[in-house]
Image (cartoon, rainbow, N blue to C red; front, side, top):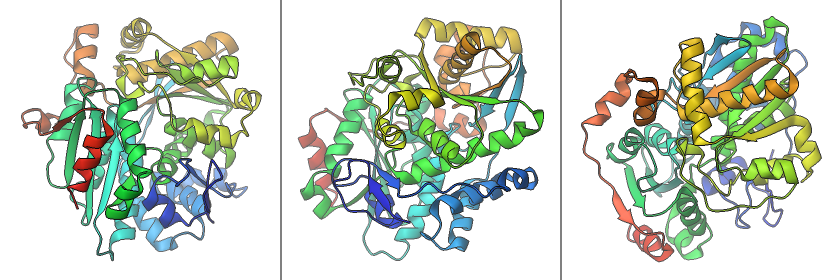
Length: 434
């Protein structure tokens, strides 16, 4: 198995090169040469499998021949060591809770798998690896926790100043050790552009061994497919079609679900739920993809105006918007509607959701309104509501309990380097690391 660039202007590479390089030289994104289907009996066998066991089967099927089986099994077992339960709310609504990991966000799955995989690849290397990652909120915290203390790896996280929650910022800026935070005076798209430009800068690449931990990196994407299989395994005995709604920003999460579907996951339909940053919803409606600067919303981790993984979705569907529509719907929602959804879910089901999860709930609701509600509607609970106390507490007039792993960060002092969006300053920062 080799991996190609979605722009098809770079040579195909092996898994280690794809993961450690992060981004192909032609500025495309790596994809597996072949998406292998599950064996016909896979969905019968998963009834008796644990979450790590079915995750290993998926990883082994997709990555067969790229890494020793025993090494892959160890990596999966070390990465997937917390649960992702499907919680029934009522009225055919289900929440797939993905916030039980160390950073209380779904990105823990991808970040931990990537950290273990990269750690495996660099264990005998004499050259330090620098991970560059842009975050709109939750990615940075998950990557920081996933790579914290990993020998031979330094992590540099870029985040948009004053555009993430206080707890999200604490997760990036208080850990120390091998984690460095850069507070960028701009948007997430500015952060992402700085990272991408560095990857295409030959002077930087010649002096620093750099890779990415954003969902542009294949190693972040693959493990996000694990929990789609696990969610289906928890619902398959109910005998109904399953629709899954994914709150979407950079679209790595949804892309992972689409890959699982191409491997045979019998999800009837996917729903991409956007906030006001609705470039994908507009594409779905018009067939024209028009990136634009992102705007700030309550669901800040989705504030992306030019989603990188759009390239991968186009690659999966041969740039055919009609083929995209066959597998997924797309809707967008305002902050006002998101706030109303947080209140509605609490009033109806006594269940507290973060703003991103609320957008997912709205996506399922919209789908049911258009297509009926006979299916089981699963919306992804992407982050613990405690990460957004400034929004959730006043909306519900309650005090959301803060998990212990987040509580201990509150009193810690923030340490971050303030930086403009000018690439020269970022490049100088990187080169002084040599």
